[in-house]
Image (cartoon, rainbow, N blue to C red):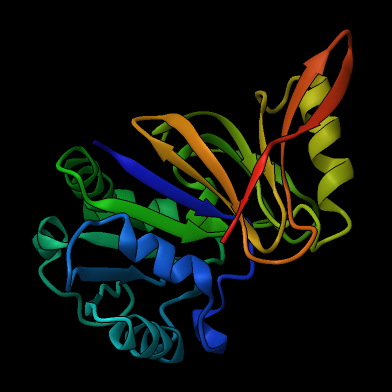
Length: 227
């Protein structure tokens, strides 16, 4: 079973952790899981990896950080991980490096073998056909991603005021496929490409289905499971 947990924003392991981290770990079904981390999209800053080690380590994981900007570990270790968490940042640059280093193929093998894939922002949209990204400084754009999940994804839907109007316009014009908008403090959990549930750990956080109907972009709020 291939599992993906995509977080709109506010996965705060860098600020002490939150309920979604525990939820992700629980989906492995392993008592002391091996947890890998990619901070590629943010340039692999040491502090990001250190925070991941601290938070997921205190939750009982054996942690490994995979950096593509320093001396890089044997990436085949990816296939030994029970979960892989991907941080936020520049999605376009992250995907380019992943293709160059062969990470894309390894992640697909891991996913097919049952590794739980998770991430926030860039690490959320990368699993969909398309994502809304701020990789360019001038505007939010739609980018082609890995295609594990059909449709598009927009993170930070409540946290960044420009996100909602941009995504609605992109869906209405057909630039973005129908998809999900994920607020900060919320996430979606997919199994084998099918939505299992929408999750929230912040009051008022939501996930919305966005699709074009009769020439307009329509939002439908999904039922939420509170962590």
